[in-house]
Length: 397
Image 1: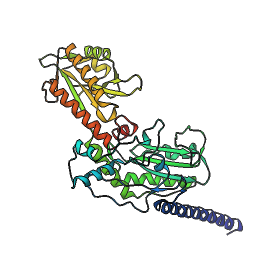
Image 2 (image 1 turned 180 degrees about the vertical axis):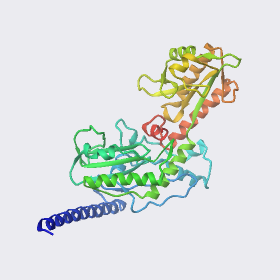
Image 3 (image 1 turned 90 degrees about the horizontal axis):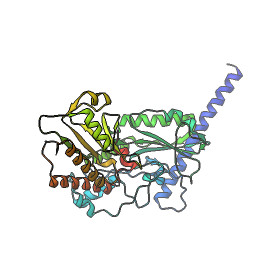
Image 4 (image 1 turned 135 degrees about the vertical axis):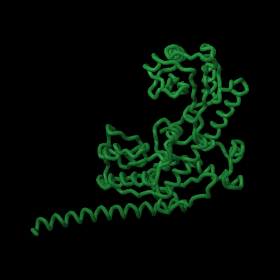
């Protein structure tokens, strides 16, 4: 073996050793800051890694906070001091009601809740949301451009994955894309824990940590992996919470005689009422100011609405659908949808019915309105503002 080869081997060993030592020093510093923050020590830097409170569902006992599950300042940046996370609210309610597996009526929940603060994750600019995301922060040895994160930015894990960066500890987080300019001294990787597809699984969370670890080794950057079992439990309980609050309201305009509605006539009436034919086989009613879909119109039959099918076929009716968690002011939107459904029923000489083809009178429509109002209130009780970015994330997929 030549002296050159020996020199290269020694240099490589020194480099690997340096990275190992750097990571060890960073972890020691992080844990020391953790201990200081737990003791209430003053002057803890904003980049101190904090332990995340693992939230629990009403029917489950509280889950202990693991010692090895710190998160970066993404936690502090996205949480106000007096903000109570959703599953912690449920745990306290279950305790106050005195039992497990308790069905929690809205009135009972409201009686033990203080005023809710708007989560920081719902501000104008996107921010990491530690209540619904698994967050891992990276501390690069030197500031890095967004292009250095290409492997992470293009990773596909079957769940929304967001990357944030900030230039200094005191600066706000910035959502990163491949064309984002500038260099960043801290990176936050955020994986959504639950949506309508279901809870993030343990293998998915493990794959997420592997993506972060591989990226950290190339930067290089220090990071602390989250507790996989605790994050899996968080995902499952959050998914159950959202399943209980996932309400969609349907009002059906139906021809009750033997006649049907031609597709061309239905399209003309729908578009005159403000609907637009959208991908996914439905018409969407879109709010002009925000561009948000307030409610949709779907075929009573299983076939989707498309430009071709509307020209060639007919249908006995159409269904107005309100996705309660995904719209702001759900009660107002319901009233708007109800009015549009009544007008369409009158224009088509059809009836307004429920899923069982029973005619909806004023009493039934008011009962549905109460359900919408109660669902919106229940969402707010667990700090999920209807129509907010948090709600759209949790009730998407």
